[in-house]
Image 1 (tube, helix red, strand yellow):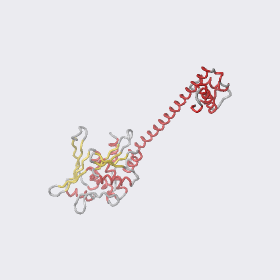
Image 2 (cartoon, one colour):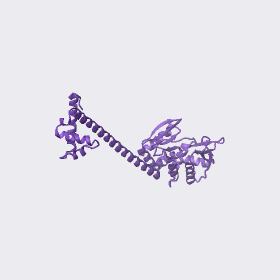
Image 3 (cartoon, helix red, strand yellow):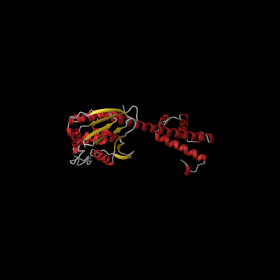
Image 4 (cartoon, helix red, strand yellow):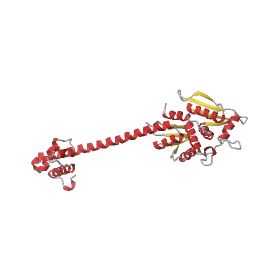
Length: 321
């Protein structure tokens, strides 16, 4: 089961005790994946079509608990995929359909089908709890979320720009920043930051998915931290090895051209130790001396040896390292 399916299954089990919240969620589902049909006798019916069984079951439960309407689910094989199925829930009775449409404000006083997409003046989503329910229903109907182990991506597909704008404003009410992009005739509201997706899971009231997401984020954060540590240590080791090789080359050049005795006694000791211990750190070299010498003292002497080697090579002072 995909992470998106697990989230929807969890949300499907969340049935609000408040009628107004259930109405807000029903309104979102009809708005995002439903349609209103009118026959030749001007009788209304509602049809919701989804490819997610959790969404179909939830819509059925919501209309039963809210309106005592026993909507039937019809399952058909998806024509475009052998494994996928399409779930259709229809409220055929005119009076029942009108009851739902009037409650969700998807029909006005003149009997015209339309949606109030205002965030501030829409009675269906006036309360914060109803805003949460509407976002939850919109995700159930037309949303998806990627597996956080792979990437961070949350989206809800809207069939027009006004619905996308409404969703973005609703998310903004909870301090969640979302963006929209046009894709294949739809307007997709999306979030690509892990923190934003955690926040929207919290708004939709999916605590199990939220904890799973947070655990993944923590593990990823730890992994990134240790990767940075390893990269830093690798870079330091590479730098140390490169410096040690250059020091040994300079010492060998001095010995081959002038002899070790060319160096002052203090420099001879550290030169001998460096050649004999190519992998030793400056601190370790300092501890081998008698008397012992600190890291900065060892570094100073080795730099002096390098300067002497450059003098022997005839490198001008201004060009020396």
